[in-house]
Amino acid sequence: MTLEKTVYMNQLLSYYGTLLTDKQASVMQAYYEADYSLAEIAENLQISRQAVHDTIRRSEEALNHYEDQLQLKKKSDQRWQALEELTQLLQGQEQALHLVHQLIELEQ
Image (cartoon, rainbow, N blue to C red; front, side, top):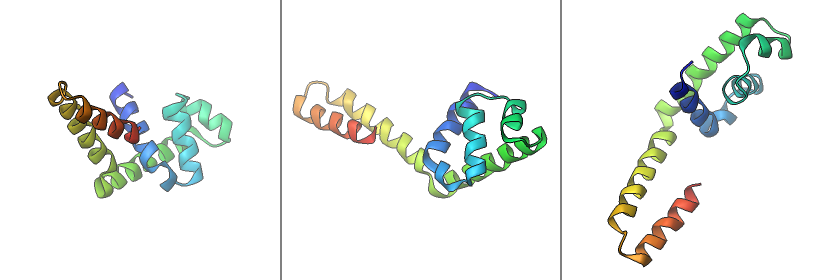
């Protein structure tokens, strides 16, 4: 598992985690957020490692499907990029820059 994939999956979990089943959400949080191994998750939930692996795979597919359909992460990334560009353009204009910073705070 690469760092990029971990970051990406954590972002998708923050957007769409509530759409997963309770079991899927707990397995994904243990795997991606707490960095538990398949064996540790299996032991904690008293299921097989294969069941953990299958749950992770299905959950990843579901999260990617939600992003493909709803594009919340993509749109958020685009807003952040636009805000960063606005910040650069407005460095000398204090009032406009203040408004941009307010927008940034609202996004967080």
